[in-house]
Length: 489
Image 1 (tube, rainbow, N blue to C red):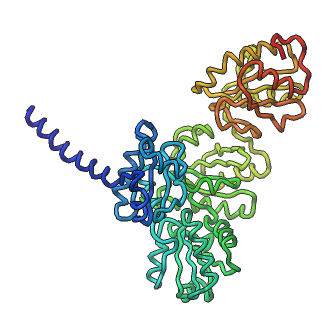
Image 2: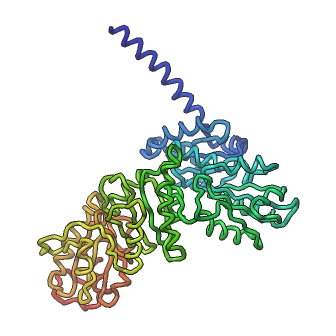
Image 3: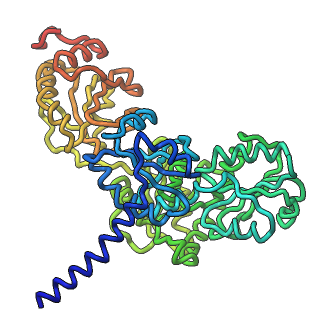
């Protein structure tokens, strides 16, 4: 039995380690000495600048290596150890690890800001490989090009056309966001009622529906800017598929999103069943100040729980609204198959009857300490009190700097305890929604909401010592501080 176990272990090691070694070999190691001439050998290359001690680099490495193997022969994945090759890392402005950059024929083409799982790395880099715009010679080429998961932009121009030159210029600038192709065969546009030079925008075939055209024609005066606007205004259609990759572009507007078990890889029909019901409702509200989308609930599960307070998947779609100003609304009624519940939800939203969702800890039953505890539900009562100047600390329970500041902040509150018109308060910005006007990008963050200036809170940027904070309050508070404060001002 022992011999059998040893044999199985040896077979496992023999099978596993060569594969791991092969994956590592698929990632090209670059140095100061060979970076330039090796990089120029590859049309498209993704480089990870790293440090051996970096935890995030270690976490990324397995996915990076898997992606390198899958992209072999298409896109070269490489890495540079910045603890050894300082010259090349400094030349490309690497200040943190891991830093991922895209290179085209040896030239720095900009940072890679996309997803970092192996699967997503492969998808994005395949999209970024090859020419800026693919040349199409026939109808068959066109059909093959647009039969894709993403939207496609196809330019039809005569040889040496000035409009064609502008199109190729736009393709070079926007290729990281969209797929481009071009052809001099103008007859390719006849099927879409376009007989002259034009641009055809093909929405993804998987999203074809009866509520809108699958192909949109652009035949106006073409510049890089006008083409960019055309794509922006038409690429997504009435109810696009919201993903982790496109959410930043879709969320620039007030957006209603319906989340369900959407899967366009394995269940196109089921995915479109609910989307068609959303489109029916969206078509009734067309032209209103709200955009629509559908999304895979699993992709956004954590966000739905943390940002909207939604529990486990109920098995039916759920709907939320997120505005550009950060206001959030959730549809609490069951999503009906006729779409009527969604329609009523929207009627309440546009009429102003809908109560917005606010993530908040419970309001403390007792709040008599020197530092008042503020939660989202009590923010208006405490911080927006029109008669009080409020110094507010936004903190995180896990933040070491916040814990270090805590005794300083408590002493500050003690020093100001006799100031009846000044409140020293703190708020857990992880478990409570941060109101508009407060830009909390890191912890700790301190603001003063002074009387008469509640809509324009003032951020504190100075040293975090008691004397410095007291000077700030004395200088910016609307009320003059009493002489009884124990620290010297």
